[in-house]
Length: 290
Image (cartoon, rainbow, N blue to C red; front, top):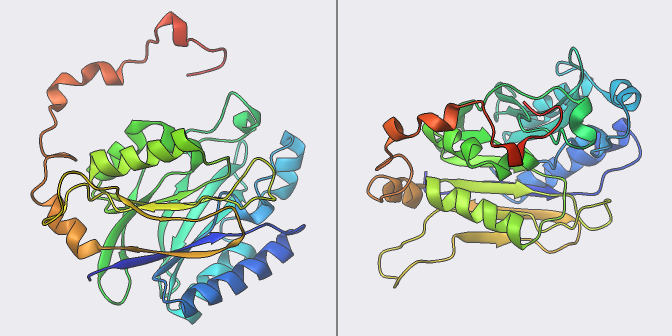
């Protein structure tokens, strides 16, 4: 499998769950026609990332096995293309910010809930996830190991590190915030230091507090025949609504990971015990933070 193609669905949400469903299904059909192996939605597509109150979240949360999510499983099978759909998941004691990836047969291969919820803001009303799973995705042309981070997860090096240690080759990042130089630099760094591809899809300009700039980084910092370090950026969308196809050179990435010095090649985990300590320096203490 020489390349893995991800369609970044940089879409404006509509006014209802049903409208988002229909617009999302149509976008998946367009992605399949473009030759995508996987179509990925921005964060919490089911309600367009509306987070206003505990009551609103409870009213708009949907079942992970319900008709909205199931429709994308059926569409994945019909299109023979994987789909990563995001939604506000009904969950106890409070909803979750969730992603499910269905393979080209419609089978569920990855289920993830945002671990680093923005608990300092309105996401304090959500239940955070409890881990960073990875999964093998069969594209029909070969297999690729995927994992996921959602928006604020990318601001913690540990998120991508755990996914790398879980074998992830490509990390999917649904997003809903302004993508500016520092956030883009975080994604570039996560790809570089872990030798992984990262596909991020954001809402376009027109969605409150969002500005497009969906991106893909291939994680290959050095290439034979090219002097010095290269920019790992594969694609950066503008602000406009659209579907942007990012092609990851998977065969080359695997060869690169097999001999370069990043990722897990020269780590020294025996020195990292303080990373697991729960105590915080006083300067970082925040009310209600773990």
